[in-house]
Length: 351
Length: 255
Image (cartoon, rainbow over all chains, first blue to last red; front, side, top):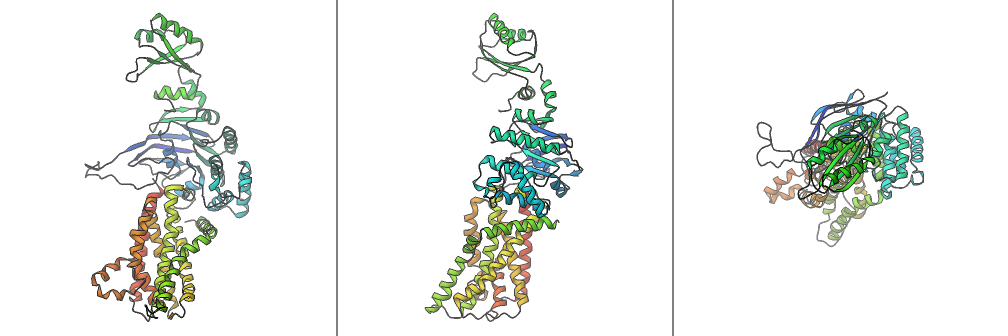
């Protein structure tokens, strides 16, 4: 059975600090005091954090879908809700035909989850972790043993298979977490920042395994703030920020939606409105944005979106000189999702 | 409810307990056995305690061992796994309602408490002999033992999902220690007759019913609360603590 993912107007408001990763962030939780009208009463120390603000998404069956966004954008909360670990404040979510909140057991059968933080069972060896996970999902013992061995091999963990995982490195734990999530062959696989902390070689192995798994018709939702990963792996992407979907499409479509594609971040020794106006007239320039200066910063920063890169620099420098302004810094980036994010939010993904 | 998953969860806990058998054994038996040795043997042999005290002490020691074992077996892993290691997340994603994971923990903790309780009898008997055990109704004794075991495990669930890692020390000094000293384990409830207010107040302590129930079924020659009242009280405490424990567990399991 192929299964996709759908969310409708998902909203999540945390009244205590939101979880670091899907379903985490445990701790004493105080309910906000409310008055008769249900609004926070006086003196009640509530700090509401809106993690998701009406997120609607549709991930097609058999698709590798990426959620791209900076830290705190709501990626992990989305994964938490879709994997039954976070209760949505409003809105609905479905895995296949099952309502995530109302039909949790059916949903849990369909999904495999790799959380952002390692959550391996430290009381077990690597092989036992896979075997017990298989047992939870009702695999018989022969199928369990065969699949565990195959996964340990695929993830290059065979030589450590019978050791306790407590002594594993971060990368090994991450590989084992992913193997565990695949153990019961779920239709939908959630990977929350799967390659965080992996060395480049292991990252490539992981990408290969994810593509392979997807070829079997499985749906994969991964979150990342790594553009390269989103670009290389995902068939479609949603860029989210402040709990909202701000752009959706294939990586190529999204990149093409940035005016020109190239981004030149330039700095001038002082601000000149006339210069900005004249920049817009240069050949190939699509959009010019003045960046709000930091207090006390005399220099002026400008983002120039254009369909060419390096060849513009000398023209910009000449234009600046003609206006009595000095060009102090230029950074050129080629068409990328980073530019896209910057274009939509005015912020860098790494901010 | 999904039996295969439930049994697999139990199997996992049993596997881990087997692996930790020796530390578990020391943790369960060292303290009660030292207590039995000092109070049941040293104090009695030297004449500070009457000989009969040995028989009075045994059910109390059994109650304490069971309560400690059950609370420990359920509460300690939950505290760590929810707050620190997040190990439990994989089991929360197993295809079974979250409540059943909590109930599995309770069953496993109760089973460990029964084993601890039954193992204390021969061990203490060896140290104390002769002891006058007077088991009249094995069925009632089994009923009390099972209810005490569930009391400890449900208490463990409620505590384990309510306190944070930094409060473990407080749990012992503020909850378990007063429970044990005012739990009629080392003396029968009737011995509090000279302290009428205290005698009433200690009735909110569930350990009182555990000690008195085991005393009433193992050594009924000593004064004890009516066994039927004890059974009822244990049932009420088991249900209350289970309900509270499940509520707290749900809060931890889903943000």
